[in-house]
Length: 174
Image (tube, rainbow, N blue to C red; front, side):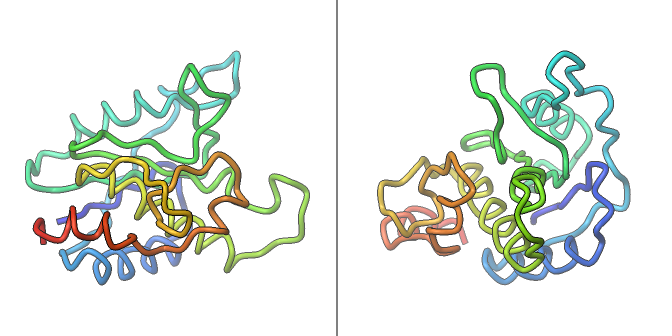
């Protein structure tokens, strides 16, 4: 089971679309949590960003289903201390992951709006971070969704599919 948890994320149509896509991709029931996670405790005022690792810890505490994967979805600027920003973060072989649309949106870069591009990037990040929760590490295959992405363009270049090697690693889980 996958549970999507909105974190100050009000785009219900995007969450519903993502729910359906993830349910089809991973062949597991996927739900949208009826309650939002309040992001305010995770704000680092000096950086004007939200600490993604702390969000993961809170998701872990808040969702009681031990057999569920939990994906927090937000539009906040996320960071970890050693990086300027992150598109998302996950617990390797764990239960929880978080993704953000903040730096996936063309508007952040002063580019023309591209709602379809934003949705596709967010979907790729969801698959990528959930892949980590299933034990996958970053992949060297340029087209694999598990390839590390430091820039938005790198997300655009890769597919939303697992390469054959990554798929073989997680296929036994489903």
